[in-house]
Amino acid sequence: MSKGKLVVISGPSGVGKGTVVEKMMRMRDDLIFSVSATTREPRPGEQEGVSYYFISRERFEEMIRQGEFLEYDAHADNYYGTPRGQAEEKRARGTVLLDIDPMGARQVRDNEPEALLIFMMPPSVEELERRLRNRGDTSEDQIRKRMKRAVWEMEQRVWYDYVVVNDDAQRCAEEILRILANPSEN
Ligand code: 5GP
Picture 1 (cartoon, rainbow, N blue to C red):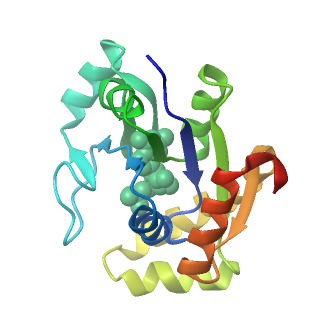
Picture 2: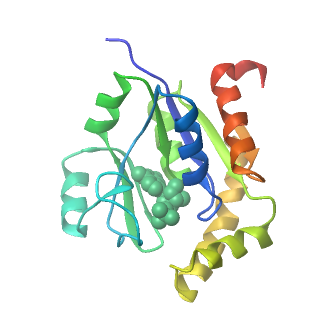
């Protein structure tokens, strides 16, 4: 069975990965989003099975024990992971986009050397903090933790295949599609 590409998109929380990925999927119908499992609470507007599979810590730990994750990581007091089964099933149908953090990206790269790794940067650190605050759904304590984590995440961009800057979601989406179309020329 032929397998589609795995495309990892990482970037600090608040950088706008969700919006860019949505725009990419609107422009190309062979892209399929890998839905992660998480133990964090849904944010307003997030739908079960679309944004994430929202599951309990007990269930997540059971899935770890059963080897059901392609990769997983703990992030801001919660677990996040890519269920292996759904990722493989989607891969049989097209190019699969994974919105995962650098710890997960490393696991994917080690297991699937062919995967394409893209890191999304904010135009500036100040802009990232402003976007996180504007989202209005994250506590002050969470913002502090996420900003600290963001600094570490942005340092990891050096080992990614490509780095893009999300100064404008549409432009950034088009840039990533160009990379996908012709990885070696970018
Ligand atoms: P958020 O809580 O803002 O939705 O996501 C927080 C972070 O978790 C983001 O950096 C996102 O890329 C990462 N993340 C989401 N799903 C996964 C996953 O399945 N695995 C890993 N390793 N990270 C994930």
